[in-house]
Image (cartoon, rainbow, N blue to C red; front, side, top):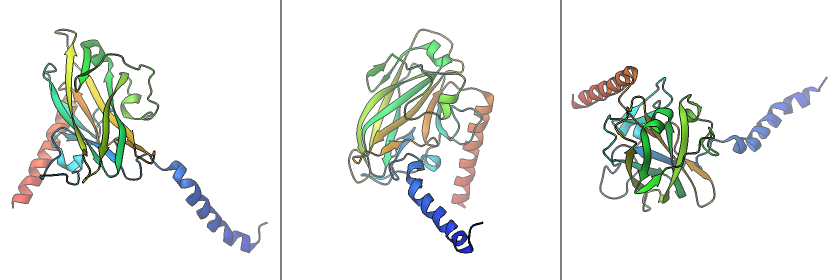
Length: 238
């Protein structure tokens, strides 16, 4: 049976062990650096400013939802996929070198699109292995209708007051033809590395999804989010 003195030292030893091993289990994020997506330009004031949190800033943010493609994401619902659209990626803290945009599609999107152009560069080949070497396992990679992903380079980003601290991303979808887009979804993630080599990612609560406007449960969620925003606005006005 251990002596009382040894038992007293046991909690201290456990605490030291946790301190030593905890960095190995720390979540990826580059020591506070995060990539955040927006459906509108995050510039709220002239010149580089601290980035606003998309969860409270972006009107298209959807919180918890049974659909893995839209839960805790910025969601752009539209049935007109022939029109190019803009999204923005900003960096909160530190730097993100060799930043990559990760574009994932579901089975329905694969059946409907010919290619996706990111700032003029076409994505035509999809990795269908079912996982990503950095981002998996997470969200859409676990979805039963996940088809595959492709990557596009976005260059280097720096946190304010560095420049550039955000990048505008032009997305153009080339369709196969007048095919049905029901349940088609395109999801956006991003990752890069600090100059010290630490991984920087877009947290799974700050990614973005482009969808056709369905299902009804999602539309109900979007309506409730809009209602909460209107309620908060009215309270501020009082």
